[in-house]
Length: 374
Image (cartoon, rainbow, N blue to C red):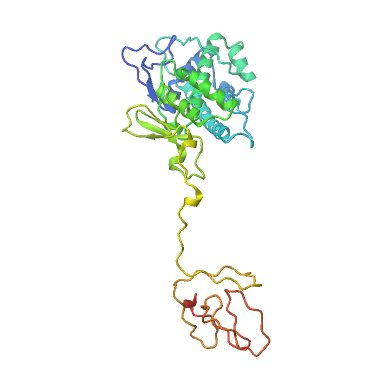
């Protein structure tokens, strides 16, 4: 929800687009997005926007938050040969960007019908330009006959705050639940940490410690030692793989886990700074694997090949009783070596069957061996 203004806080309008306290506040992604809506209202009022202009603004925000467009705010090329961290962070940025763009579309439609009051008068602010490119229709709308410096400054500030919001959420799997530190300048306090984060992401294989450092600054506004996670007031941020299946869990993202017991900022660091110094166990010193109970199937005789499926394991280590029928011979795969005697056949010997088959002599009835033999 939008933070309520205290009785002594300045009203919205004039040069103030928010009522965030000087000491800062904590908001989730959706709450902060809602808090930026006065900027959109100022754009609508100054430029006399109508529902016919909604498509232009929607296309602009989608192009800014997407990857691979001319207007993208994150020029990250992702391909099959990209580093796994870049692919994972890039996919996360696209997912978040699409959701934020849908929020913007809904907000614009709502504000065109039900406007936000600005008691201090129309918004007129000065916004530092960060170089976000506009689509041709958006440039005509904001800089043409209907636009002007006031509209352009308002839109530049709103667009940049949304870009900062997208980037601040990229390190987290459950990004909608992350508590963000918000100051009177919105998320502009994250700009130095964001620049360092994006520079490493775009020019080299980003380190996990760099992802953690940026995430920590987003939540706490402070820096700390290099680590693999951190704890802040109200929760912890640790690698997502800790409580998800290793084969499907994100390898480089963090998950925010609420924890009421957490009441200070702490960085989780590795026990050993140099993993080469970690104790090692040689393979020859490992304990032998456990031996399975039960009798192993007999090895095939020389010159014989096993073409059928592997016989099922024995249910008991003791010798199986002989078949109840006198006309059926013991199965070669289940008879013990001492009971296995050559057949006294008077006919031409047939090829010996595979160990798992029971083949009677010609002329004798075919009966299944007793199940206990298996």
